Length: 201
Image (cartoon, rainbow, N blue to C red; front, side, top):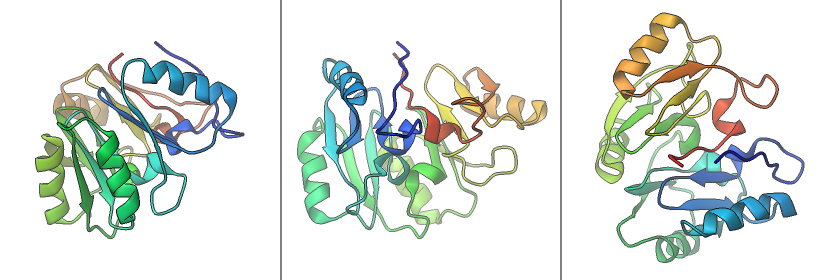
């Protein structure tokens, strides 16, 4: 299923929503159209309405897959408890002590592989591997270190920054073991991760 939607006046829905195959985290607020998309999701997976560190940019602050969810260390205890109680028991929720705290910008993952910012802490890399159950690769996308901002991936495929070279596309496709294409979102935006949310259905 593919659906177009906006969050209030923003087409950058990936800023306000984290979507996986087993759950979705959504920011409070949004237009009626955005709520309709969320209600469609809620028929299949739990949709958790929350904030992270009292901010609405849930999609840029968190990273997750079917196995787990990573939260920045600025997440309040109340927010973490609400999220943990709302998600399925098999989803591991972990707060991460990482100076690069916008985890959605520095981590791009599916259920098998994670691409991470080259300067992420070694301890954080190990947490990503353990909590998400993935193989972790330090990578850039078209020379950009914010891999979560400049690509979106699922277990079915990936969309990356339009200036990613053919050689880099081949290397990434080999690492990820999924088909990969370079392109833009929202009429030419190169910030792929902010402009869309994707899972396997």
